[in-house]
Length: 441
Ligand code: HEM
Image (cartoon, rainbow, N blue to C red; front, side, top):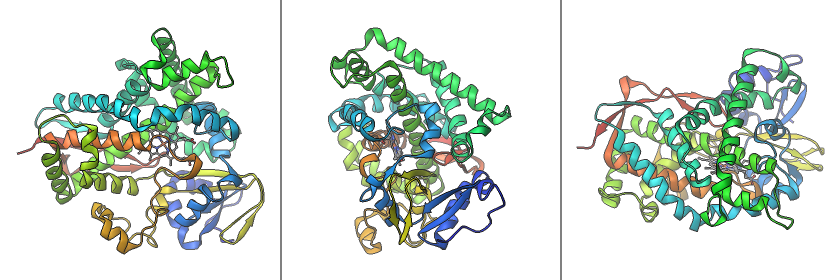
């Protein structure tokens, strides 16, 4: 099997993975469909083609568990939906799935729209906004009031917004390094522990605060989980399981949504023609009124702009561990093999996408997709198979409503040519995108 060049004694490729994960992962496709990396002394087999990643997630999904990456996440997100395996995962997924049904998303859409309207009404012409910060606050507040049916207080929103990135920035490194290193009292470890403690406190307060008022008929996730705590049957959950699911939703839902919204606005800011096309569509569909869920399927240009931003800035690294011997790309791996893949890298694969680094929303026009021969495995920002993201419909609804509300009223222009800096995290962050709020003519 091909091995990526540049391994050093003892550390292997670990230093490169820490310093420049996006660059390293993006470079592996040229060596083969399955490429070996050494993270310290641990061999990690990286799948670099979208067909192979799709096969791991679907047809061969039963031969894998979530493995090391997610075990290292457990101290933070506990044994929640994203980290759990086997029957435990199936039981929790069945319990939580209804909260992400079309009907519930429709109920949440009113809150998504109201919060977006409040945001754009608070802006003034000429105001400079830090896009990532603003979008992160919107994502936290919307998630809290739809999923936990609670208005997070300002300090709680700030605690999630400020501490979550600290944890997620360090997670990639932690997942790939020996557990022993967690205990060394160096700055990154101290920051990580302090951020984790602050977030745990916010989550505990949310559960405590909801306990009195929660009722299943309120139709939010926290009420459902609390009702399951009191159930008499096998579906019963304990307090730790509830805390773990809430943390998981925060970990999985905030940074990803923030990135999708921030990158779409930043990319449209850099591509005025695409921005004008989307704005014209929004104007004709939405007019001056509030954006509703009925508008969502009537905004295909906006959807293309969003899909393209998500393609270019997808989840950095995911991992699985084989539970039995398995054949991948003609290589036989033993049980216990650590397999990794980067959605970021497969979505920038020149073998699949023409001009892959370019932001080109119209590549998603049906006729261009057909001509380019893009199959369903080419674009999997939410994963695939039984571990596919539970929040995909939620995200598309929220992001479309938020973006349409913003673009109907304002044009966001990059300040002083300040573009965002792509910072590696679980999903690449759009750091430093300052934009000037300009009224539509
Ligand atoms: C742009 C936004 C989002 C992206 C790109 C995204 C991406 C993903 C991906 C790739 C996975 C699969 C991970 C794997 O296979 O190992 C996943 C799982 C998950 N996501 Fe998302 N996600 C997004 C938004 C959300 C939101 C808004 C929520 C919650 C409200 C959410 C909750 C989850 C959960 C709970 C899982 C684990 C599902 C399971 O294993 O059963 N995600 N997400």
